[in-house]
Length: 560
Image: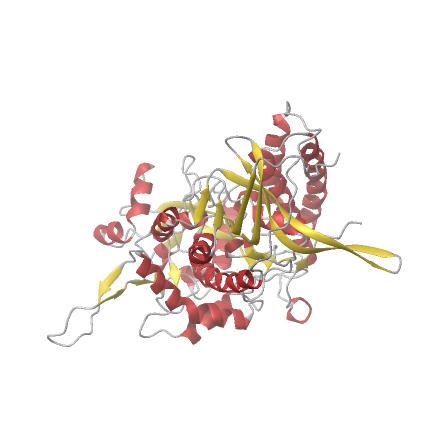
């Protein structure tokens, strides 16, 4: 049964110059920068503020300290990326960082400031950024708004979005698939399909249950990460890899999906869903200890608790396997209560909700899936290899993060590439001036029925997340990966059959996407026969630069 669009259905159609799918820092900043030059449709699957950006506690890495430099930030990023960062991308992002952060300040973002200590007698009091330090950074360079940086940035950007006359915000809308115009090319006896350009997306209105057709001259995927592919994650429920899955289905190249970053310290409590204990806690002197109070990170890395996330997460995983315990602990109680409450007010309040006073006792923590270093391959302007389709933020693979993201480089990348993509998209819009939007057929649900077997969705959702946690987690093996591959192929087949038989809803769309992203992660992990950065395989425990110092690229085979 072919769920092809039906030209007769034209009621639910939205036209815009720019279609932005996702409302994190990348999508919001892009939308604001193009809105003065054209109409923007901004689609977000729940409320606009629900994003990974909103949960980002630590801050934005950028060079402002007097003892810091671009070269040092570049060096730290390259070292964390374990040989797979693209140096020209790293240099671009690092050097543009201060300007992008000052733009946020001009918009009204209230970053934490402090008085300059060095000033002449009689001079005016000057205030500069209060800079934090996190794992992998050789200097203090984390610009933050206490421990709620993402929330503060999101607050300001969403407010601006809501007030802009050229931006229409579609909350509680979830994208189903991209719309591409294809051309068939025949060479000899071989016919292939080439995705010529993207012209919008089919989007489900969750309230009306109607799939709308969004047409646009430029489409931007800014849907965030894929943490919900795993059983335990710091990500919100919306992080189901939608952009990566949609881009891949449309024919875009994806890269480096084996490099999934597990944050070392998520709060361990049965009621503390997804709550992250920021790396900044360790940056301010927090120490990871076991149940007996032993600080063990010195056994794994000379940087101890300020080692990169991949090292810390594997160390905790190893200690938990050795001890059989369910968690380790993060202790900053040696600092004054006043300092802790002022520096980490949100974390302090959240821990108190669960009966944990971090000023007096250590915080129970475990690793959890946190950030996808791979994604849809883009150029320096955020363009994918499908014309008029851009990807920015965690959805994209720009070459910045390599095999392991340096802490707080994610919001920085989103800002820099949101800006770069907006400049290029405006050039593209100018080149397309006067060209009408292509005629796009509407969604056709013909032949589908309402599902009476919801257990299929919930069962497969749970099974995917458990098999990914158990077989494709912090430490991997060929045997576990092979088992995961066999099982995900069976599950994907079940989901595909279910998808074509029943009317789409948000749960089915997300299930289809996490299954696809899980399969791509497994394929990528099986392909890489070494251990590098966030990918650790016990069968190949060492890094092999001779054969594997390269990106893992995947592209959907063309059909027919």
